[in-house]
Image (tube, rainbow, N blue to C red; front, side):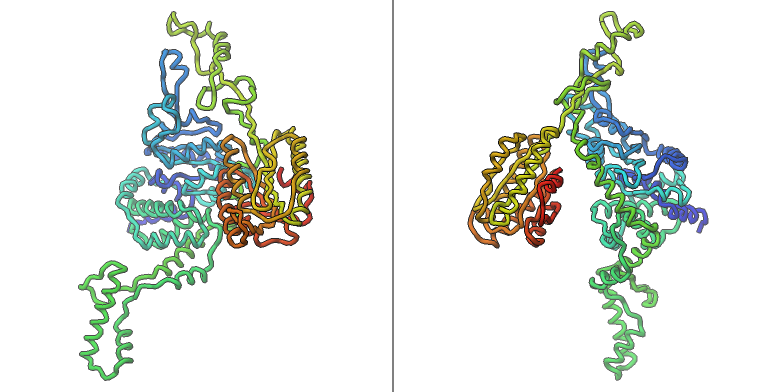
Length: 638
């Protein structure tokens, strides 16, 4: 065996960054890319230079600025060329030019969610169709484009990280500490090219499928993309080993390396050895062939008066039966081999135990804390700025903020007069394309409108007005709504109240900012009767969908003990009423995925199990306020 391939293979496994980079160069479109969490440093600059040189054989390496707009991504009308030529001219976007290459995104933590969504859509659907209207889309927008992403995330631990919808589509997550552990090694371009050719011929056995899937469950990885990435990384690493002219290592060694680099940053728990052993013992194990001594002992224990010839005949029958059973689960054993040459296959539980143990040995210390912190940063990227993020300055309507330099597109409109004003002072220095052209307009002259459109937030109070307990809370809810209405003149928010009692729910107060109307409706709010909770949740979902289609953001605060006794048909019966309420709560949970905020305030004197169960079904935040006041509810809704 050649020591040089051995050394290259060991150096590859020693550094997570080296392994991730080389595997990505073998299967860029299948592995998605790398999320590099590292600030600007000489180590990062050196890695980027080496990676760009190694990726030159794949395709173009294009850098994308974090402030890029939609037009620069997917192309569109070239306004300067169109004005000069007198007819439409199109230009391709970054996603059309990066075909089979690498898209490098610097300062990815500042990437806008809309731009990240377009990149994710391009990764999921390589044929970029329907991203722009056909009238303004570039002709190349319908061509297939496959690429890999290199996210350079410079955020700190407590800051918002790169968008999670992009990170989940990348196979490898590299932390800043892993940059300095080991030096980065890139294989020769000839080796990588040979590995890319061998990748099409490399396959994985069903045992590898099962081991990778169960390893994901053992580490608490819930993303379904992770096992797919792990399988592709397994095939890529196997192709790399073959391209190094090295003997293929044991599958458990390759699986452990792949599980450590793919599942490690995504892990939410570290399994113990007893858990892995118990998982393997719960599954039926295939029958393993026994040797001659074991067969002889079993037969002699059953009948010690058998002759040696009869014993040999029984051994042959036992061996034939064991070989027949093993053929269903493993490859058939050749009949030309002796029984002593047939080795017992390793069970799936043993493979899983070895894989998890080896992967744990390769994982860095403090992994779970870092992974949880990174997940929190990714999930808080869109909400870290609070209410100030609800202003939209790139729309086509709203309060005018003047003009700015930029290219018109789907979300920006050309300001013709401002463009002409910007181009006129430069006409004396510019050469006109023809005598008939009065002006020569360049890209720097283009001006677009600026608008500020503030998204409206509607806070919906769903009040349980049935019984004495709800009556005790009505005064506090009225005070909270009054406090919120006083803030609506500054924040331009709206407040609505839905009350449910007797056998139905009604919209007591439509979305309004009128103090007079709100006070009049709140004073006349009655109480007493049954608890039609299912009807209230159904009405809330219907109204929230309607308001969401009108461009409003909604947050719902339900004040109830969760003990429903009136079903959707208005008939009494606690069992049917609770079943209908749970069904409506699960429907409301879908609205939470669309961006709506849901809060359940338990109004019972003691914690109510029904309210907690209902909040879990609705995926709402649960709060117990046995001694709530108006200011507390107002702070909860802010």
